[in-house]
Image (cartoon, rainbow, N blue to C red; front, top):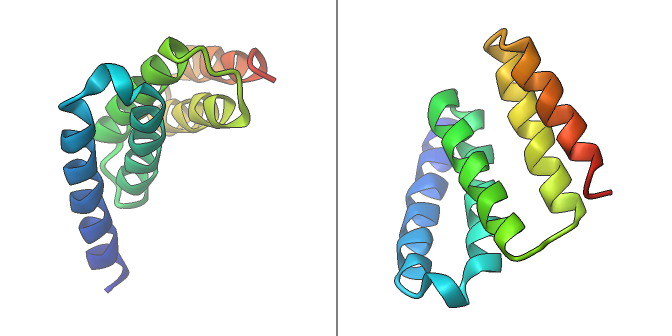
Length: 103
């Protein structure tokens, strides 16, 4: 049942992402937020590769918006966690270090 709810959330977030991408330049901040949430949902349902992509895109949008926030740091941490799960220690370490930059 919980997995089904995550899939519904993922579909909803994909829909929002599509709508926001129609006017990308005016939705940079929102796209960073939606992609971070999408990454979290994908991570929760075990779709790690897609979660890495979502967090990476979120970071790109957050950096384009010149965001220096806990949300940006959190994206780097979650990316680090995913790399750690995949035994990619250097990538995990790099992301954890990047998480300290915005704070």
